[in-house]
Image (tube, rainbow, N blue to C red; front, side, top):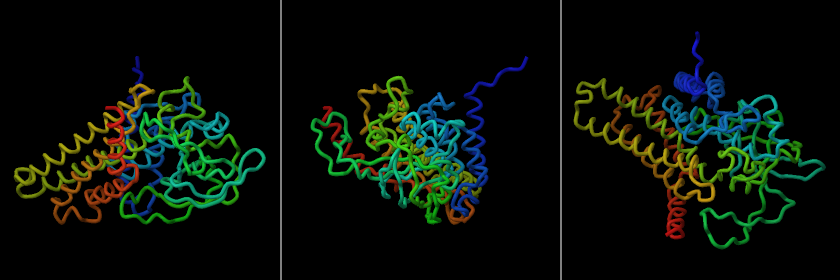
Amino acid sequence: MPTATHPSQVRADRVREAAAQGALYATESERARTLHPSVTEALTAAGFARHFVPTRFGGTTGTFGELLDAVAAVGEGCASAAWCAALQAAHGRLAAHLPPAGQADLWRDGPDVRIAAAVVPPAGQLRPVDGGYRLSGRWNLASGVTSAHWVLLATVDPAAPAVPAVPAVPAVPAVRADPRPRQLVLAVPRRDITVHDTWHNTGLRGTGSHSLSVEDAFVPAPRTVSREALAAGRGAADADEARCHRIPYTLVASLMFAAPALGAARGALRAWTRLAAARPDGLTDPTAQQVLARSSAETDAAHLLLRSAAERADRAPLDDLPTALNQRDAAVAVEMLVTAVERLFRHGGARAQGEDEPLQRFWRDIHALAGHGALQLPAAAAAYGNWVVLTS
């Protein structure tokens, strides 16, 4: 009698296949400045697009711990693929805050819908019309936009007054007026988007993070949600929804951006070890042994920090979510991972700098990744310091 395969094993097998495809086509993805189609399809088959999609549309409503492990596994072969995998999941989670009719527009045919986004900073012009809005403008850095089915775009709502500030740290006593106008996030189908070939970056070249423009596209009101609702973890989701839809964006954004860096560091460690083992002294050389020990330990320690952040997102009481602690751990973890890869590259010799050598690609990718605004230590440290003061 045949034995049924558990869904978690199927997912693990498909993640491994996505990782293998990412590694196989990493050089081609870099040269094309967007993921190879086989990689894009493998990521979708591995369940990244559906990871946070509501179950009523066939989604997984998965955990952040599962996502961390899956993204890091892909990142061991190609950091660009891991970056797009993380964002496929993250943008599905954001879209789950649209009103029910808007969600149905995206997922009526199934949960494996690839969603790109350009939500920071807001751009474009919005004009209210009957039943919704007319949207025009240009946005930058929309990773994976060439293969996306939908795009989330942030813009300023011209009809709304300024909104109260949402505290970045829990328990801030006073809510003061925010001079920034209210922002809306709108879901726009790929057919209404024009992609501009602008992504010529040093690292994460395969992410296809091009610019895009929209010309007078109609967006129905149900395909819009306030950016403040996303930041606070509220919107169409209610108390009966999955936990992953009730988590503030600020609690998990840095975690999801950091996950590809963990995979990149592991991939760099493997690439360096292969190069070092081919030398005459191999790994018996004391300097090589120290490089291996320190970089592997830092990578493992960073994993523990990111694992803790994922655990908080998955299990901490919803009325006491330590956003500042997660931001601290993600920023420090990425600094540790950059340090580890920097050491590996510095001790990789001339061979490590070859155009087709994975180590130099991981080195470039992790530096590009660490430059993301959500992973900057000064801002994370300030939030953490304020949180410590308020909770001590």
